[in-house]
Figure 1 (cartoon, rainbow, N blue to C red):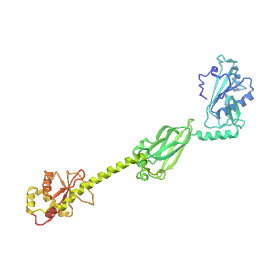
Figure 2 (cartoon, rainbow, N blue to C red; figure 1 turned 45 degrees about the vertical axis):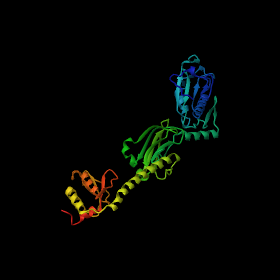
Figure 3 (cartoon, rainbow, N blue to C red; figure 1 turned 180 degrees about the vertical axis):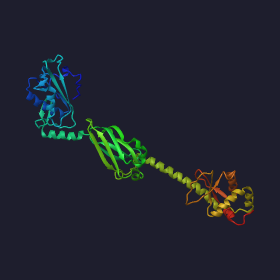
Length: 411
């Protein structure tokens, strides 16, 4: 039923006859009968989505003198609380005593119309004091049959929020792995806190964000977040990881979902779908084109070395006069490393070369007009450029290497 605002509710808001949401009991009803009917009604409304029991009115909802504010030595409120406390489990409820008939019947002095509002319950079935279960059937409270009680028990299980976890490949970006928290039942989980301990490697910088706090998770609003990449997933995610999810239901009952989690074995294989295959082919083609360009660039400049003519002594005599310092440095390098032919030119910063493929280096700071001096050697075919990245790179011809390592260099 719609929630009743007891602060503003008066008798003018009562229907003119009993229905699914309202049950009327006359002030002529004996206390023992009233006690029994109230217990049945509390069980019935709690098992049927809620409702309102009204005492002290006739069958049309008009006050017929009301109920006395004291029953024996007990206040009417206390008397009602004692009856409801015998319903198991006790549902959530509110009481109101109305002493102004508002034009609907009469209420005697020291009497009142009793309103007991039973709220919708997530912990049904509720058993009446006579050890039976009741439901509302139209305008009547009737004893529930066994199959109905079983159905209410089942509804009770599924009316509680139940959360679990799931790993998945991130939609449209399957190189990423996501951890998701999702609901198994229709009941919403509120005030959710998610803790992962220890945090996966790629989430170390996000430690201040944990525990993650969410206002709600339900069947329509799961929560997913990135935790690793598909490549080296086990190394990035780690081992002995525990997930803890703390959450509450709408009645402020607390729940804990805690479990060890591991990413390996929790994911499907990466599938190349039709909508992604074209993009992947294009990417692979670009990579192949780039690699081919590098191969062609390097191979195309290496091969001419086999065709270089032998230089005369006059050529070496000329370049000795033009660039003696550079040739002296190259001679010293080749005397120490006679099998190296490749060199780079650069400013004085650390060059991360391949330790298995040593390369000589010459610096702009050590040789003025270095690029122009190398052009002279290029013009004579004694070196040739093989640059294939951001660093100018050259190869020494065997003719120049033989000259620099010989004992009969021209002075």
